[in-house]
Length: 408
Image 1 (cartoon, rainbow, N blue to C red):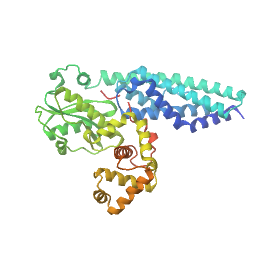
Image 2 (tube, rainbow, N blue to C red):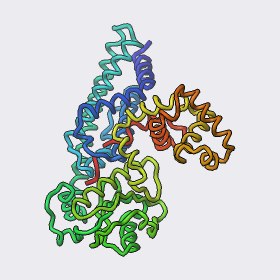
Image 3 (cartoon, one colour):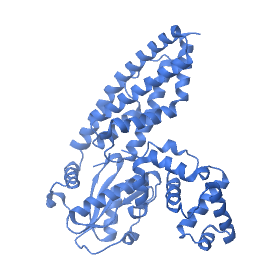
């Protein structure tokens, strides 16, 4: 066996463990760098998840193909750095995520080498070669990450066309008094927080204000979002039905909070709109209202725990076979209809006796009463649908795509 053969053996062994390694890195990052996850940006989290996988693969490919370390980080890694800058993530926190990933990757390499290359005389030169490449790769990649971050931060916060208004909005959300005239928006009255993204985000917010006959305030956010409010002087009670007059253009999405009054209301409805946005990035709709996804938004704050909860509660019904799917659909309709068998039959288009049979089958599979486990099962089914809509993607692959900093 040559050094090249041993390197390929080691690389193949690490690749087999890559899914588990990526999950371990993501969890360790949350434990050791909590400041990186103070708020929630699903786009940044998706970029982080992709970066972990592509970085490990890049190292493995480079060391086995005898190519020199790259002159700069991959496009995926640089995109994550730019998104972190837009989200105002501290540069030191971003660099710490790289160091944690490198340390865990090296631990994995050592474990695989010990397992697959038991002869220490052969293992030592392999590890020496890998370590030299790994650290050289890290030095070059880190330099380009810092440069990309600093450039984006300067462009976004120092040169952006709405940087002054964005600074005022940041102060407002932080509870710092803001000059209403400088903001150009009346803070007294009724407000609806909104986040838009896609083809025409800013224009859509303005069109929504026009359709309602209200004023609007909007500023650019991270990852192509536009953040803002719709408002009017009156504080009378209003509900989401007002939004029926709003037409959302194709390939554009809106996430909205609930109506609230004055400055405190602006802060609250913004937070709600952001939670709606987090859910909408997983399951996009033209318009996502916080009032309809409040439970999902709350539960998604700890996605690994959500996955464990779903698997535990659904048990065999978590499966992808047709029988499990039918029973899940029946239970969802049963809970949605207030546990009315006749209404359930009407919803799913079967006879009432069929519903009764399926409910008994579900109880037999779950080995417990549906009535006593109603709340747990209902939540587990709602989260299953949100995270695994097409039933082709394992929930584990979604674990690291939902958590991280807001755009303001």
